[in-house]
Image 1 (tube, rainbow, N blue to C red):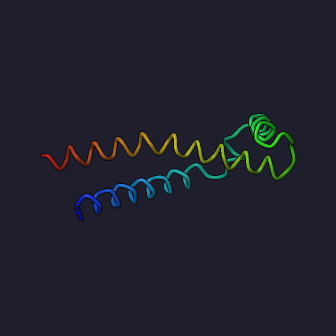
Image 2 (cartoon, rainbow, N blue to C red):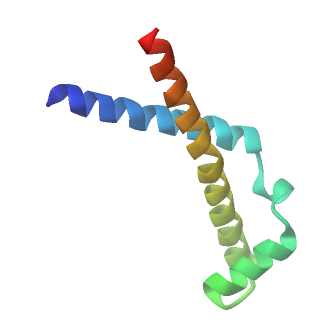
Length: 87
């Protein structure tokens, strides 16, 4: 039981570390997210376009981007780790 919990915690920590590295590598979302897309998402989320809703939209788009990049990187890293462990 303790082994299973330790594995799950180590997998979660490795995912968080990879997520952190990806987020730092991407940088500021204003650099890679289109302003038009951010305004449209802000309007969809809050029904109004103001500074706070646009900032929220950038956050959500950044978070989704980081998750979409982190997931395949994590899966590849786990597969490589298992492949190296078997040899």
